[in-house]
Image 1 (cartoon, rainbow, N blue to C red):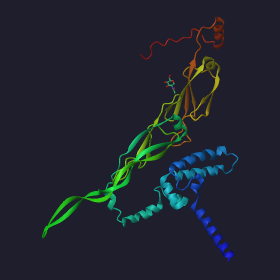
Image 2 (image 1 turned 120 degrees about the horizontal axis):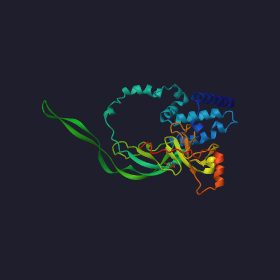
Image 3 (image 1 turned 180 degrees about the vertical axis):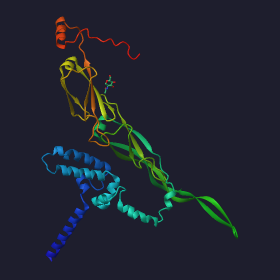
Image 4 (image 1 turned 60 degrees about the vertical axis):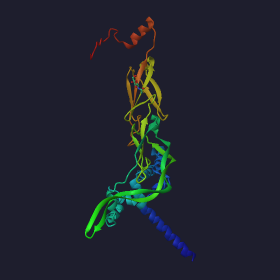
Length: 356
Ligand SMILES: *[C@@H]1O[C@H](CO)[C@@H](O)[C@H](O)[C@H]1NC(C)=O
């Protein structure tokens, strides 16, 4: 008896194992999120794990690269609503079988809807509430590192109310018999009686993810969070990113620009300094050569992260300005300078009024 139970358990175990192998990787487990996770939760978790699990940070773990690849694969699927749907239904297998048009199973079953009379509803336009567009002020720091912003929205929500209202109104042809063999056809507005609805404002917290590299004027839509429509679908709510001015950095595309003023001594003798970047990391600058006013230095990969591919970054351009000392030098000092720079003191160019 006991051995029969053990045998059953063993077969169940083997069965589970096979199912797991066939089903591929558990993307939810890899990302550490529940199956009900929102896209925001998935993105948040991915960003956190990607930072921790990056192979560069786990050099002594031989599996680090594989685990990082699994994480990337999991994110690619679960962050994409269509792929996630397929994955939820058919596992990783389903995704590999799927062609570019998406879910192979749904198109198979989709063909049957011809028999189901699904055509009827097609031509009727569903009314839709208005879209709401709101500006969302974001700092350059947030656009550099990413952030989650919570917005409290008072949204009108339909609630049952007393009485009924006319709904599903449409025009129908009505045939009336006037006498033997005589009919009259008229158009008539026909409505149903629906339970009444009144709109009540309700508090709702919306979580907005400011993704690294988002651009000014970029729109961030919340589907169906706009104005409701009593007979149809609500419109969308869209947040429009408004990048605030920054005191130190100017952004052009994915490049950043900043100005630094150095002393004349540093300009001539070379210098070393650090610039605090938008996320607090330090950018090291070393120069041995003479720096002239307006000289530019380019630091590649120190610009903004690219929105489409966060691993690509723009450049940081630093323009130097020289703080000249004031006053007069002594004859001795002037002589010393002449000896150092060996520039002809008659070396002057009169530029005139070029370009006028
Ligand atoms: C740098 O200086 C130039 C010239 O004064 C100015 O036009 C530009 O806005 C400055 N950039 C920043 C980021 O302050």
